[in-house]
Image (tube, rainbow, N blue to C red; front, side, top):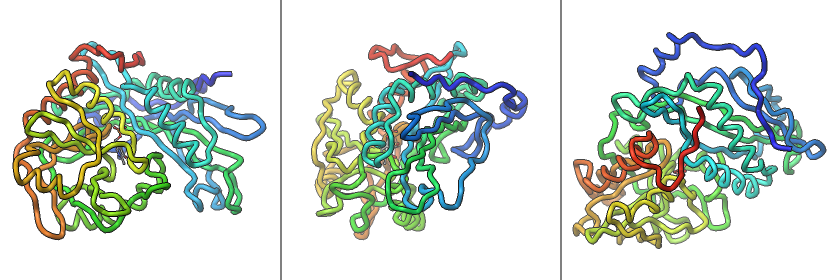
Length: 363
Ligand SMILES: Cc1ncc(COP(=O)(O)O)c(C=O)c1O
């Protein structure tokens, strides 16, 4: 039977003034809306006890398996408020499908895709008051974070026999402080976040834990993110710690590393590739060498390079920094990067026709 995530009675609600104050400067992922969706899985009962409850601490025992073996997965998507006040999600079915694939890779129970979609629609509807207007930055949203954790108190190394699924939400502004301006990226060719046969195409916490040291080092060098190369030859571009990467060629190809098994199948990546022809660009998914990218930037063959993902939308890359120095792409945001970014935001915020049926109305 499908899950409904019915809201419990007697939920607590923040005052309008509290929410408005947070919407004025939401930052990223620091404050959380009033409620959360939850459901439990056990082998005997399958998915059950699905409901929307007040946001609050989980009851996690120190022996809970997730704390020891990191058996967990998550997703990230956003709710957008259109000018007429209606609230919409962008391609939640794509997140549902990726979540199911992540679950299989981490030996977690699959949450049926329709139940995932029901959970995100329900929590977004319950906390619709928390979805900000786009605002001056044009990119304020309510970020939805579905996640699933091993919830069994057991220290044996085995797939958990009790699992918790939840969706929490957070009003967010721009991912990079300072809005849309080209960022410096550290090109990491020594440490890797994933490897062939590993969990690179799953969205699991372990992939992010392994990226944090390189990220700290990148910050220390004045960079805002890390671009990882492949783990075998350190010669092929993969993705950033939390975003995919694309290069625009002088002859209007939009080139992005192919899905090799070690990079995340980004929903933003797929959407931009699908709409590239509308903007006069030819989408190309193939291996992209580290030296091809750096040489191409220097020679002018790649006049624009950008990162893309739900959180940061489309963020221009101003320069790539590595041990040998800094390779500058552009000091200003490139025209094509901006056109792609605006096109995507216009669809998400209902300012352009959603000709591919990507939006799902919440309320
Ligand atoms: C490692 C990684 N790559 C790429 C992406 C972009 O994926 P999406 O466009 O689905 O947000 C993300 C963000 O979720 C990510 O964490």
